[in-house]
Image (cartoon, rainbow, N blue to C red; front, side, top):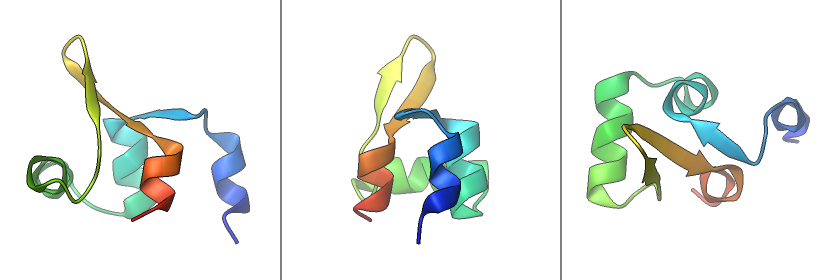
Length: 56
């Protein structure tokens, strides 16, 4: 079902997450801020674990 995700590493950038979820930057950041999507900061970039994306 999620075979296309095998092309991505286990830790996704915000751009990759936006592509997978088909959402824009503002929507992605709102999802992170509300706790709907777990993410962490790596320097100035948001990173999302692939497993957390699948659990949504």
